[in-house]
Image 1 (cartoon, helix red, strand yellow):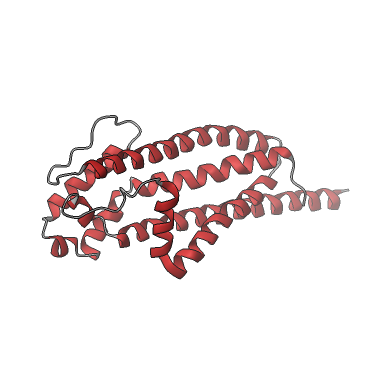
Image 2: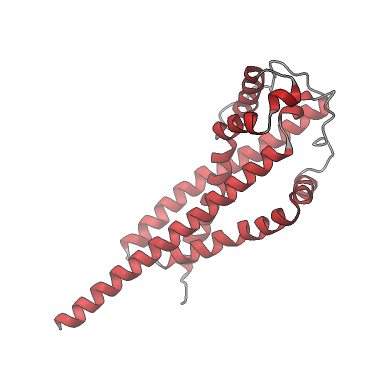
Length: 221
């Protein structure tokens, strides 16, 4: 099967939207963290109340939004200069991802509409292929050693060691255990893979429809 330039362009835009949307959705999906407060026994392990943990996490997540441009001030936690710099860097990264998500939503909506209007559906299959590659590779390494992948990610993305928190200076890290980030990663991979699966099923549906129409026309003739 050969793909046209329109197929490739649409698929790349679609893939970027799926991945960026998955990240944005999981970052702002607070129920996952609320579940982990109990599952990871954060109240027992940190000696903060459930309400304290929940409220300070909400402050952190609200801070990550592209629509919030104020300073990060926790209700119950002090914060070091290095910790503040790190959260500012994280915010810039998440803001870029949110911008990519919004832009690719617009471009993908237009490109997909144009392709479907022209009855060209190959891009669904290519999107599924492109989208599934990245999470499978990352998922493989995460399965082998998530701790190592976690460290390598921070070393690659950040050009400093401010992400190595001192719990005494930045006690917020006590309510952000590594296992929570692993759960976030798993959910992101799941959403991406599920989206790729949906794209492939949509492609199969259109292919069967086209084949049925061709067979009907051949039978009629």
